[in-house]
Image (cartoon, rainbow, N blue to C red; front, side):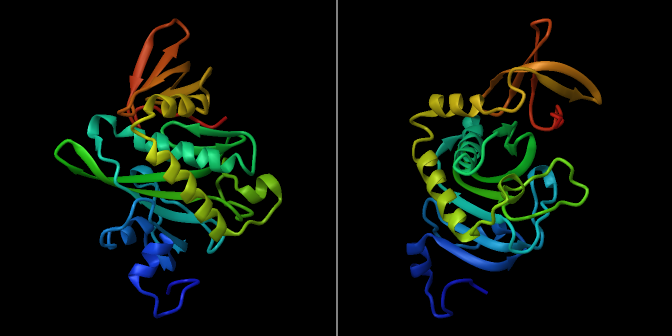
Length: 252
């Protein structure tokens, strides 16, 4: 069921709008793969995902109609060694978008979105690679908007919890789309600026607790490379390097 459009709408008309609303889906990323020749920035949004998922197979929980659940399509033409630029651009777009409504926005490496040290959003990125180039990317985004409570998730929050205000999800989906299009249009030409802006918003950048093999240690973030590698500076000025899931960053 398509929301907000008549049953006779054509695919060409949907492309002109650059967004497709579907009431319920298993996954917006899966639905995006069914679309033939989408344009840059094309979006599929839904009120509920039956099988919403996050990075590394984690599930994304959301009440029906309460939150922003969408996937956005881009063709970045990016070398695989610079793949983390996609994550930087997506998470920075979300952070800038949220800063219009709430303060205390941070990014927890690699791309969890926090508000006042609680998780408000996450990203699932799925790339198509030809040779050594990323030619297509689907960016699945979940942002807690109007959800008022979370069971057994003490570190979760939403825009409603932070601001005591209800929001129109459809408008937010379109607004976020504009932020993403701007970031992705400038991603490769201004990669250093993108990285600087991403780094400035990182959670526990200057000092924080990290966990490796259940052993906590204190460190600061020294660098995040364009392939996603995290470099931490320890208190003794030595360095450790990590890729995804090799180190935990607990919320405090």
